[in-house]
Length: 171
Image (cartoon, rainbow, N blue to C red; front, top):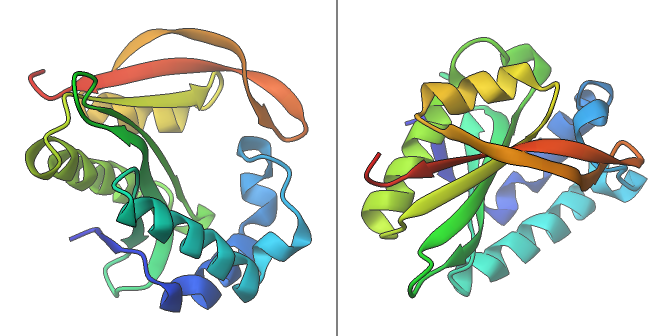
């Protein structure tokens, strides 16, 4: 398994990983307050994700390497049932763990959970236009590009265009 459920006990390890990768992730992330890179800051993030999970609207997981250390995080958010049966997925992997297939494997596992266990019909993803590595992870997992969203997210201090992708349960 490349993923496991995130727990509050992961806060310090995630904080250290975020802090060590702050510069690497800066071009892809929103501007974060210093508190985000601390154990208490990550504990607050995890607590919020776990509340969403209890409500059935999120599935937060950590990505682990071969030794069990946390290498990143992957989360289904905005889970909706009824006629929509949809969610969004977001993920990141530490710089030192890039290029080893961890994100691709983690996404495959989460898609299996989304389609088989949660009964979702569709999972959406968005990447910065120039984030070719993330687009390759999506392509390896059967996502198709469905459009361009101008000024979609506030990343690195400015509104940035994103490419939109989807993966359907039946294709």
